[in-house]
Image (cartoon, rainbow, N blue to C red):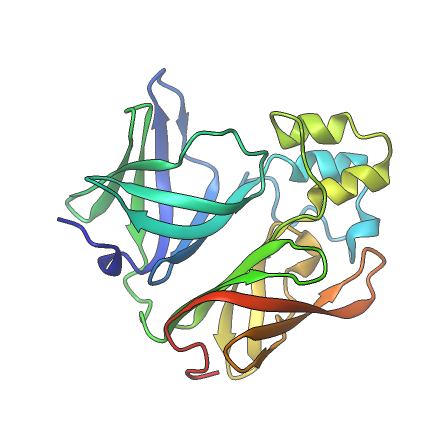
Length: 259
């Protein structure tokens, strides 16, 4: 019987197969699992390295936004239900479809198999065996100014930070929303959703992959305010640095450990 505490770590996916026979072996997927807080970033193979011209949100054109809209990602709380597991998405890069993200998990050798609750798909997951699982902590965040949600989690020397967009989506897919945007500013606002993955070293917390390409190879700088507040550096659409203030609404583990 699998327990959530047995699943902390970094997971990558080798294959996803749907009931109709379609397969995906090329999407780059990273799922970082803490004690219960998680984040997941899924990028098509032609995303990485294609946006060197962009230093901020305003550098993205319509075609850039359309390409980035093919990404997927979500973050929230991972929970054990009655005989199955659910990824409770607090925020989702794609428009919410109303279906729960839940399935059965079981070992097949050293492969963790995820089988959709309605058997509509299965996925093969592989945990990084070299990753130390401590420190391990996570926080769910809410911005007091605009009410958007986010989270931050650390497992060993890896971290993921997630932040929702400030605009609501009515379309069934993000790419449809971008294609229907009234102007490029509106398209950029739809893309302005961050899921960043990175590594912690003596130099700091460096972002190595992100749904916002201009965040890659930059440092994630943040400060804690006791146990109830967090502030991190961010960029305005024009690329100016500002400080984003968060309220910590849920925390697990010791977020002051080994900062």
